[in-house]
Length: 218
Ligand code: SF4
Image (cartoon, rainbow, N blue to C red; front, side):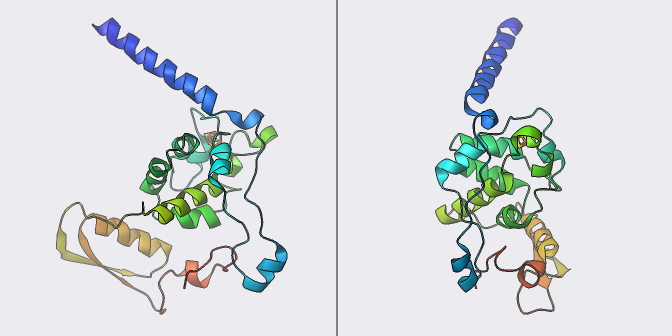
């Protein structure tokens, strides 16, 4: 029984490895490609974001360049330890909702990080195929995933795991750190109040980062 069980596991692992080899590891034949820049004339008049989004095929293609490292240095050097290889693979497989859920599991604001994280010094700067083949375009794929999630209604409101609303927490500062803390405390069921001296929440995201890097909707 035990030997048969081990054989089953070997078959599953073999299938997984074969699938990975056929679907991923495309970095040798597929060049790195970032989303196109919008024309300067258009940007000069509206100050909207510089880069367009990937189309679905391009996001899948670029995600499939990942070599699925056993020790993923992209993840190691991500301050959030985002599970990058797995959501790249899900993207390459076209399982976009699962890819989004995985990326959002460790990140309160993946739509923001995909746009403004210094990827060249973090995940992409430490991608092992950077030397020679150029890194996987992790940030652009993350932005595509999250924008697709918003468009399709996959972003769900927070559902507290239990009711601790008899206890409330006040958070001073509605910047990214304060809002992320509020999300996690709310998830645990606490009543949360966030205070800020400015009339809009967001802190640095609203008052520090220009619109051509992070567009505002209002
Ligand atoms: S380091 Fe690069 S190639 Fe390796 S898992 Fe991360 S994104 Fe993929």
